[in-house]
Amino acid sequence: MIKMSSHTIGILSVFAVCACAYTPEELGQFLRVGLSNIQRETIDGPTTIEGTVPTWLEGNFVRHACGSFGHTESRDKNLPNYIGHLFDCMEIGQKFRIQNGTVTFTNKWYDTVVNDIYNYYHRDMNLSSVFLVSTYSKTNPGQVDAWRANFSSTSKVPEVPHVSWWQVGNQAIAMSETPIGVVVDPNSLQQHGNAQYTDQNMGFPDTPAHGFTNNPAHEHTEPDGTLWSTVISTTWLGPTKLNLKRVVYKVGADRYRHVVGQYDYGTADLTLCHGRSRYPDPALRPGYLHSFCMTENYIILPEAAYMFDPCAYTHYDGHVPFFPQAFSFEPRAFSRLLVMRRSDGTFVGEAHLQPFFVTHQLGSYEVNGEARLDMLMYDDASVYDKITYVDALLGPGDYSTNVSRITVNLTDFRASISSLRRPDASPAFLEMSNINYAYNGRKYTYGYMVRNFDMREQNAIVKLNVDTGSEVEHVFPEGTYVQEPQFVPRPGAVFEDDGLLLTQGFDGVTKKAIMAILDARTMTLLGKVTARELALFGLHNRLFPLNVGSFIGTHAEIHVIIG
Image (cartoon, rainbow, N blue to C red; front, side):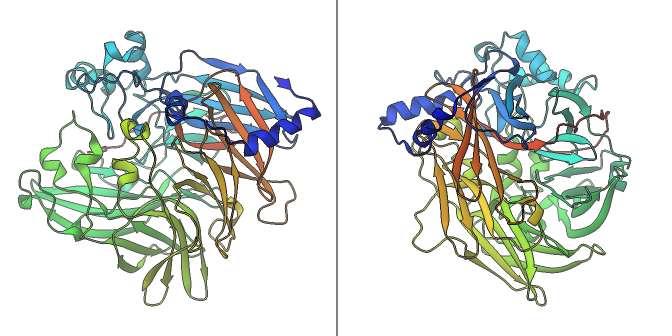
């Protein structure tokens, strides 16, 4: 690690406010850096620190980073020779380790079937093509079939889920959107197999007739470590009868997934499926959840009008991306709000709202007989099915987020939607929201987001006062791309915003991985950490204490019919 002298503080002001006059072509090249390929591993590599890293700040700041996109500079859409969508990139384990004011950087490939196969082709997608089943990206059917048996082997996990991070007990668990993840040691960035739970399939029949889909990537965790989540349960009652339920469960110190409540959508009659048409009754189509809300007394599920389609089971094609087959946004249908009482698992209320799509949450709380639920909302599903394709990311960004509040009357469950931003605020693409997690489920004031996430336009970390709508932001130089901000409270903090914001990303100009440390109260830059190696785009990150990861998980089976 190289530590700069106090005279380098002046450099930080340039880092904070410089807006260089790059051409659109140059900005496109800088962004393309994040859609390229990591060439080699780096283990505990040195970094350069400009400014300061508080000595009290410590942990493994791990990120679900992309490691390979293939040949995005010479895209062959027929082969294909590149990963077509951000969500499908080949992951690499990545972290900044922070301790006693020093920082190291690690890029490490996980020991998985995916990496074994890619290594066989010398990590060249012109040779391998896209050989794994995807979420949105086009695959090579011949290569999918050629390697399918390898993915069915139980000797090694096929891949490490690379969306979000959970913590159960002392284990860090890499998650996507199924109810099981892979244990990763944040210290070594080694995977230790599927997470082990002590229940048997959550109490549901462990047979091919039963399955799960759409477990939100993001959980809620109570101060005592109890984790809450939810999943869609599917059960075949006959050749053409499919029952669908929304199951809410929690996991405690016993590592047992306790089912708390169930919402029964009903039973779909698949004789009503014709060709590629969607199931005709939206009431029997569960809405997509990437995240959900928790207040002091309720779990509240804001299901998007991006609806799961039971008819997908009649024509599912394992060579074709999963999401376009299984979900579709229905602008003529509705978004569904389900309210479950935490104490006994009873679903006490339901509301239908205008069609919307939700990615991430800010905070949620109860006041004066109402629940106030703050989230990042969109008018359709384009944030998934349009703008996060590689071809779209390489084009100009023109997309905006509705930072919204749903207010629910907890007596009659009428609900309304309003904006948390001021009327004169400029439209902005705001994503990857977080709050001070000590305020999760109770009254809070501040949310933190990244502006122009994964876009070539100038990035910033935004602090939003949800009571007044006022915004303060720290703007990064053009060519610098940052992702999810994480709030870390200062020891002994009294005020909600007394702490730091950590964010990772890369500098497309220098082609280096970076970490930025902001003062959350003032939104000023305290320190910039630069690795000697490259980082690419990715998804969520999390700061784990240095002692997390001492237990090793083992294999646990669960049936997932689609996904």
